[in-house]
Length: 368
Length: 104
Image (tube, rainbow over all chains, first blue to last red; front, top):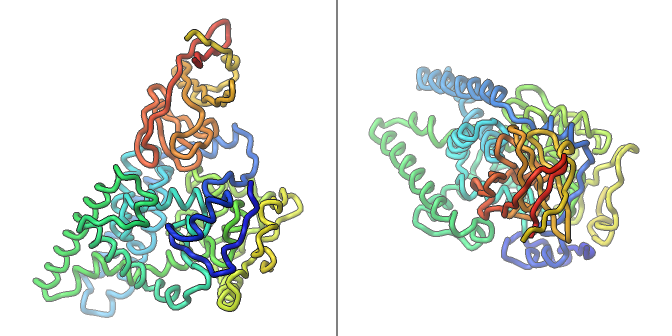
């Protein structure tokens, strides 16, 4: 493979049709062969096995809590008692849908495909991600994880836009872009960037979904106007803003402050140990190195996978707080030097990084 | 057309599993179904050329290990995004405990 060259000399170009997109292809970073830990086939098969039971249980809890908290919020609407109910409702609506969308999009949450599809569609609506567009963008994210110019899902680009990061805890930039994308798609327009990863035959489906969603939001707003009340919007739409905090808090940790333009998920992804409530909301995506290395392993088997391969991975970050304690200073340093990143240390039992693929990258010099 | 080549012993593949077979510069995937029948397809996913033999067999479906694209390995049919192009299938027979594939 060709040596990896850095796009950093003139600043990174994250456009999917720009200079770094072409560079990534020339440098062999596009659709490259990624490192993965060796696992015997028998064990891998066991880990990949699908089951409906865990996801049915979790979905009953999720939808039940969503209905109860939403009903509580509506019941106490107009009093301060509605606040804790909407806090729970918003988090379940605006955050746990991030992982439901994701896992069901992979088709790994349930064994039964229609169950994956049903939860996928519901979660996509709530998180405001077009189910067609995002299925394909996420496919690219797994092919070219944090490859500049190729990955459409890089949450924090360099140098980091910290205002945008903070505002996203309230869903503001995401919802703005999701709304403009929805209106544009509903008008029948697929952008040039979307065309780079959505096959032509799939594009009409993205347009159809955008039109259905737009109709739902218009109907909700009309109901709110008719009722002279914000309540309909507190239940549909606004939770994507006031409930986004948890998915942003956990999502930033996935790759934030780590390497880009490498083809080893141990360098660009972060596994974080978390409390059980966050793991329920996040459906175990805190095991993020493991997920990227083996995306066909269902969320409920990721703790077992982690135990099996942890000898070959950097030590997991011990908590969400610890993750932010290393990530925020890295973001601040990237404001001055966008080539800076945190290099994950491997245990002695791990296979070393394939430095021959990375040591021509001037960015490596900026690692800590 | 009768380019039957020996791919493996019948017992080399577990039931409801898949095995990689390389021959003549090409790569194939050999499947053993839950009903103890054998099938063969192209070895690489039609989406991004990942080896299907590292994927998961469920009933008559092979799921690609990279993006979870699904094919019916008996017919080669792509079963939805992100796979859009069918796999080519190849005749398979078991003779004297050996799995033979017609690669022509």
